[in-house]
Length: 531
Image 1 (cartoon, rainbow, N blue to C red):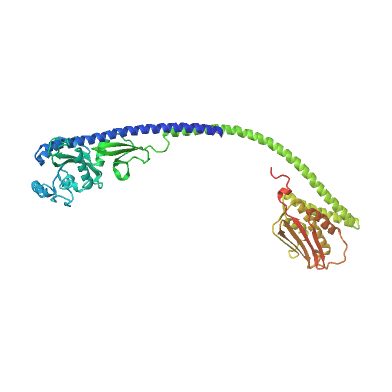
Image 2: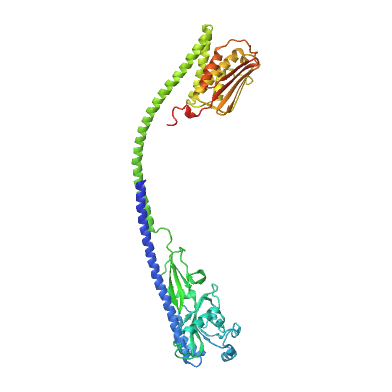
C-alpha cells in the first residue's frame, strides 16, 4: 500500500504540473486574444470617431447641411468597405421646440413615414434632435427618420456629454429602433456635436449648436466585425457596458461550453468605458496528456502493489502456517486435558452409580440390570453431546432420548417447553435424572399402568430453567416406601452436579419432581473461545 500511495502521489504531482501548464498556456492564449480583440474594437471605435470628427468639421463650415452635402460626405466614407460594425452615418439637426414647424416646412415630405417628428414634444426639453438624414437607405434606417433622439434618456445623456466635451461620445446601451430578424437588437450610439464654428476643439468660444453627426451601432455586429479575422477556437467572448454584469451585456459569442474560467479587460470606445470578457472552453476535466499520465501511473502503481502484495501474502501465509501449527499443538494439548478431565468425571459418575447400585441391589441380577440401564442412559446422553460437538444441547432432545422407549403412544407422554440449550455437564445430569424417573415410573408408576400419563414441562426464569416431572393416572404411591437408588442419585449426585436442590415429592396421586438447571453461557464451558 505504501508503494501504491507513493507512485500515486508522484503521478498526481505530474498530472498537477501538466494541468497547471495547460491552464497557464490557456490563460496566455486568452490574454493574447483579449489584447487583439480589444485593440481591434478600440481601433474600430477610434476610426468611426475620426469619421464623425471629419463630418463635424465639414458640416460646421457650410451654411446648412442639406441632403446633397450629407450624401457626398457619406459616399466618401465608403461604408461598405471601411465602416464595418456601424449601421450607418446620420445627421440630427438641433431644433429649438419653437422652430419645429419651420424645420418640417423646410424638409417638406422627406420623411418616408409621413409621421413628422416623433414622439411628440413634451414641453420639458430645450432641444429637439430629429433624425434628419441616415445612410445607407435601408428600410430600417428610413423608418428611423423623424425620431427625436433627445426624447430618449440614454441618447440625450450621450448628446449632452458630447456637447460638453466636444468629443465623440458613446451612449449607454439602447435598443435599436427596429428589431432584427432575431428579435430586439441591442446597441449604442456615438455622437459628435456640430457647432457654427470651425474651431470645434475649443470650448472657450463656442457658437450655437447646429446638430449631431452620429453613427448607430448594432453591438453584435460591432463585435463580430473584429472577430472575423481572429481565431477564438472554442472560447467565448462578451462585450459589456460600464462594468461586467448580466444587465450590461451588449453582445456575445458563446463558448462551446460554459466553464466560468474568464478574463476581462477595460476598453475605451468613444469616450465610454466598456469591458471585454473572454471565457475559456477548457473544461475542468483532465487533458489527454494528463489522462494518459494518470492511467500509466496508476497501472505502474497497481503492478508494483500486486507484486508487493504477492510477496507479502506469501510471508503472511508462511506466518499463518506457523501460527496454525502452534495453534494445533495448543488445541491438541487442550483436548488432551479436556478429555482427561471428562473421562475422570464420567468414571467418577460411573463409580458413584456402581457404589449406590451395589448398596441397593439385593442380588446380582438386580445389580446388573441397574448398572446396565444407568450406563446406557449415560451413553445416550453422551451421543447427544457428541452430535452437538460437546456444545449446547436442547432440553427437548435430552428428554426425548431418555423417554424414547416409552413413547409408543402420544397419549402417555406430554412434553412441552420453550427452546432452551444446556451445557454438556448439565445435559448429562438431566439425562440421568430423567432416566431414573422414567425407570421408576415404568416399574411402579404411571408408565407401567394402563391410563397412566407422564407430563414433562419446563419454564425459563432469571438465568435458570425449571423442569417439572409429573405423573398422573398411575397406581397410588404408598406412603411407606423403601428409599431406593434412584432417589439418592437424583437428590445427591444430580443436585450436586447442577448446583441446585431437587424437589422430589412422592404424592399419592403421582410422583412430582422439580429440577432446577442453570443456563450457562458458552464461555463458561467451551474449550476455546475461538480458533
